[in-house]
Amino acid sequence: MADRILNEVVVDKPSVTWADVVGLDGAKRALQEIVILPTLRPELFTGLRAPAKGVLLFGPPGTGKTMLAKAVAYESKATFFSISASTLTSKFVGEGEKMVRCLFQIARQLQPAVIFIDEIDSILTERRESEHEASRRLKTEFLLQFDGLGTNADDRLLVLAATNRPQELDEAALRRLVKRIYIPLPEIETRGALFEALLRDHRHALSRADLGKLLRATEGYSGSDITALAREASLGPIRELGAKLMSTKAEDIRPIQLKDFIAALRTIRPSVSPASIAQFEEWNRSMGTHGS
Image (cartoon, rainbow, N blue to C red; front, side):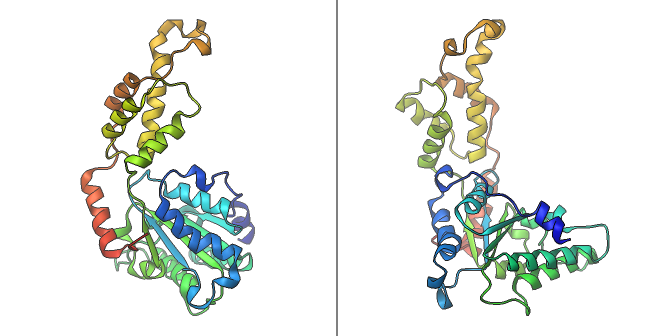
């Protein structure tokens, strides 16, 4: 079981840095305090300054939650574990709880460590009487290992979780995820920086006025939506060539223009509805960590 965790769960540091994450300054600042600085200067973060043991990144899909986790893995000197529901579940009775216990034991031996759980709502949903006993035991074991009687306050172990459905999480899990950071849709400045980053390595003929029109037209788009939009627009000059594509040199293909983005806007629509955004903002006001 330990070999399986070390082979499948411990990940090499991804090549994603803070600079690669456009915007999200509040979230980056919070994670810097909770993860990066305590690993670099552990003697300063003791007692009341001890970092939080659990962090929840929540918000609409495609806003950069997993990207932030990759940046944390790269910037920190901690051992990084990445788990999902498939890692912990098993067809054998009791195997899931043993896997959870083994995971936390190895993480404590290799501390400082970060356990990242993407889509945590698939594991720690609210407990109900009607759910399967194996699922209930798995959740209970996870909560006990996270912050139970056998845990040590001096452990340098962080559970970093991400979800698009924070309202479905168990209350006991939310209590342990002390820092709950809202990752919103990108604002106009962030969208501008994202477009510049995406177009940096491509020839384009977008003026400042064109970019301003594009930013206003992409209100309500997530980061992944904007990436999909830019990919679609980049194909415009190639599609225009038609049968001439095979005989045209790469340097003779025209640059990307505003009309390509206008055509792409008809195809790529926002993936998050205003009603969903309202729910996230309401949950953030009642349960989120304010000021982050």
